[in-house]
Amino acid sequence: MKRLLFVALVGCALTSKAPPRELRYFAPEAEVSPSAHVTPCARIRLGHITPSAHLRHAIEHRVAALEIAPYDHLGWTETPDAYVRRALVHALFEARPLEEATAGRVAVLDVDVLAFEQVGPAGRVVLRYELRDDTRVIARGTVAVDRPASSRDIDRVVSAIGTALTAASGQLADRVVAAACARDAG
Image (cartoon, rainbow, N blue to C red):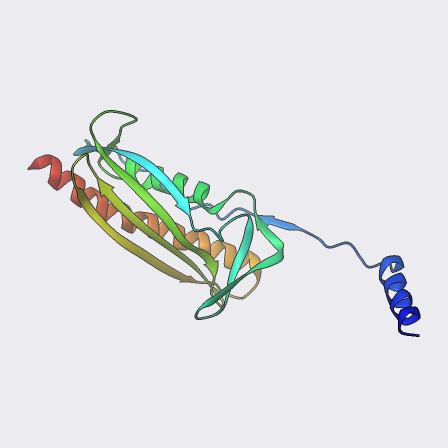
């Protein structure tokens, strides 16, 4: 009897016509504003941008203080580290007085993307950075930015994550400019 019930349930699950799951993809681009030309005060190279292991294509949301979960049907068009790299290139080399180096004996900036997520009706971006040269760490720290969304609607939350990304990359760039320019001036 149990076997017959199991076969009936499996058969129903295999033959039911549920609507297909709709996958939606989003791109939380950072806000890019035109920048005035400034004379560079230092040269740095943007090194590794490394996402935390859980940050992939699925959009994450915070379930509790210590728990995050991915949405099954909502994803990024690229991985979060790609968005962070673009935002940092703009913030460091277009909007601030740093010259981008691709090789040579210059300071290197490495960044870990710790959070790129929804927290209630808000977007959160957390970046940990380390600016180093061949012999020492020049600066290191963490930048965490939350930006409210006008609602829990995912379009609004993605926009809030983009705004948080702009603010976080700007704050990180300000810290790096101060450290790199002080290093090169001294």
